[in-house]
Structures are given as C-alpha cells and as structure tokens.
Length: 96
Image (spheres, rainbow, N blue to C red):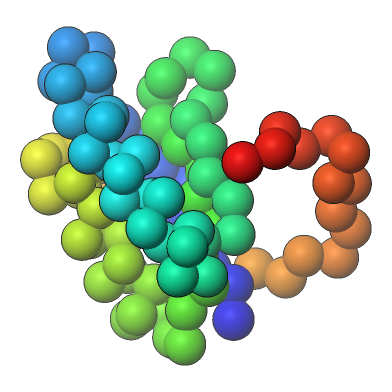
C-alpha cells in the first residue's frame, strides 16, 4: 500500500543543505528497494511530499523516521496517510 507524507522542514537552511546528500542517498536506496514511489521538496524548501510503498502505516512511519532528514531534525512535522494513485502522467514527471 502507498502512504503519502506531507512534511514540514526546519527553517535552518544551512542544516538542510548539510544533510541533503545523505537524505538523497537514503531515498535512492528506497527507490532501488521499491519502497519509494515519488519524492521531492516544495519549491520554497519549506518541506516535501514523499510517497512510500509499505505494508502498514507503522512500516511507512518507520521508513520516514529512518531518513537522515528525520534523524537530524530536518523533519519537524508530518502527516502520513494511505494514498491511492488514480491518474499518473509519466510525461510530466522528471526521469530518475
């Protein structure tokens, strides 16, 4: 099942920049393991939208909490909800 997370970041832009490489490495691993559907920051860098593939909401939250951004205090608040893709236009999504 898919779980969508709407995440709010800390306002500390220097800390975000410092931790971002390890965060992206973590997401790349999730992508390879088919645990990540899509992810990306909001254009103002105030947070992100991430969709995980998980067996349960508890597993999805564990995946989120294992992210270096969460462990290093970048994720300050989030909402995690079951999500169902109904329409997807692959031509509008960036290649990974």
